[in-house]
Length: 202
Image 1 (cartoon, helix red, strand yellow):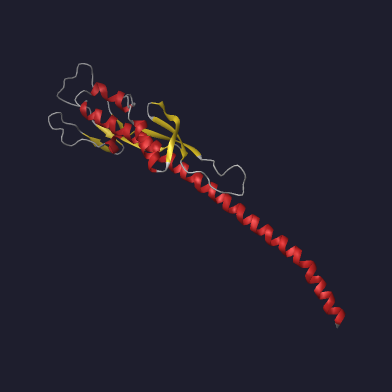
Image 2 (image 1 turned 180 degrees about the vertical axis):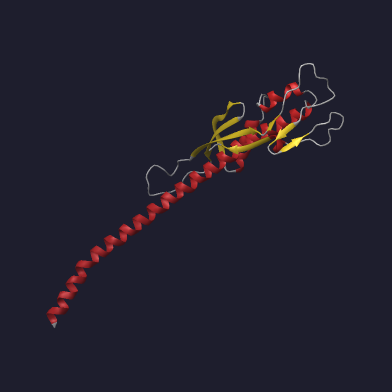
């Protein structure tokens, strides 16, 4: 009987270091998951800020294009240029910077570009670092992310003949709606969302 108890005590003593090792390993694994989660949250915040900034820039230009179209509605020769996005917009990137700031980030350097007339690309950096972590060298790292937003014109029309008078305007077809524009009664005009769609590039 004494021998059995003694042997059991020995087994328990041998198992204790193994138990400590297993627990330590599990704790290390848990800390690693927390570190990965911190980094993922930081990256997701950066991507949210980048998406919002790119959309803000594109929406600003969309509104500018739509506003200029209303100004030039009686001159159909200017319409196509506007639907092609041919209009400067010096405030679009400022708007992108505002949205990045609202999402606790900043534009990375001067990273707000208009590579094409109907496209904006931005890159942002989070204001907050990843924070304390068991992973060395990442505590002060700030996540970066980029996004591209596209302005899609939704309307088509048949340009007027060169000798056409100003008594009529071309019919504007926007998606599944036709706008029959009367130059003498322009109270019912399409809104910016009718003329252009803004979305993130896939």
